[in-house]
Amino acid sequence: MFHLILFGPPGAGKGTQSKNIARKYGYIHISTGDILRAEIRAQSELGKRVRAFMDQGELVPDEVLLGVLREVMDREKDVNGFVWDGFPRTLVQAEAFDQVLAARGEKVNLVLALEVELHELVRRLVNRGKEDRRVDDTEDIILQRQRIYRDMTQPLIAFYREQGKFVSVSGIQPIEKVFDDICRNIDLYTQ
Ligand code: AP5
Image (cartoon, rainbow, N blue to C red):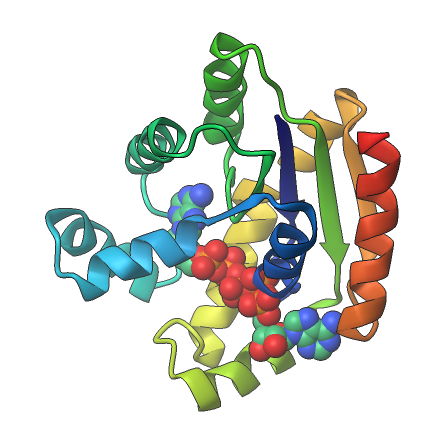
């Protein structure tokens, strides 16, 4: 079972690339953002609980995400692997994830980070906001999401680097070129 974490700030292209990776390698794509947005649309208890955090660009509490993780792991069995998009996002989540995987005799195999500069991230998300109307794609919330990434999520780079699993790829290239670079790395780690 291959566990790939697609890492990077909001707007780096994690969702775009994860879909292509899942299709090519037969992995299950898990976007915690998509799961939570679906709960909000369904007006479930979970959706009601997380809505304010997401609308403000704040992280949803770790214990909620760990519940989502357990649910996903119970549901998806007998697959080639997973692409994790937007998870883990805090050290608590990363450590809990390692424990859950270890209990199954599995581990995080590769963390691929998409590197994109701040001004380009903001440009992409402002543009997406005009088309998709995602409520957290307004300029002030986009900047808040980037701050949260810097403070809460970026420390995971050192965590995974120490484990020898962290590789970065330039995300400022055409989508197909980014995908080629990603595939080269996955192929290296799966041979
Ligand atoms: P989430 O849904 O994960 O959003 P995000 O991390 O902010 O990521 P985005 O979807 O904005 O960007 P992306 O990197 O996927 O880029 P994309 O491919 O879409 O999380 C939303 C919220 O949910 C969080 O703020 C939090 O509240 C909550 N949450 C989720 N997970 C959580 C967790 N683990 N813990 C706590 N809370 C959690 O691309 C962006 C745009 O750029 C698109 O328009 C795309 O077409 C374009 N684009 C992509 N690649 C390129 C390229 N190479 N060149 C030009 N344009 C490109």
